[in-house]
Length: 139
Image (cartoon, rainbow, N blue to C red):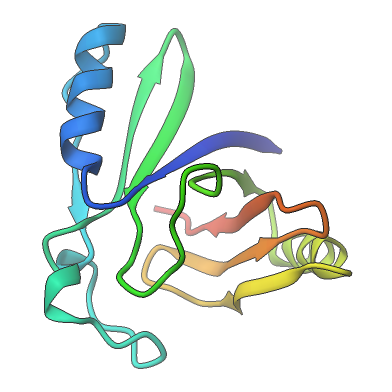
């Protein structure tokens, strides 16, 4: 199982990640905007979200760092902008881990199918740590 730091920004993701890529000598990142990700009826897309970064990543010495902008309306303050992205091998494991982390915590987004994942959700555990559970689709 892979654990990856996931850093969120409040609209400055593209600028920050280009800065980090240069600082760490990483390849130029590819950016996926919220607008490019497609509409999800459960999460209506405000116009101001469409140009914000939904996901990007860089690899530094074989270790991955993931980044995004915060979706409009989601809470953002210094200190809550770093989460741990967890990629379990299968949905059963994802549901078990998500359920455990949710005990005494709060589901920010319940597990559901997305364009990139058969099972994705976000939860803040009882200790205030944010987790993104993500079963990646086979390509």
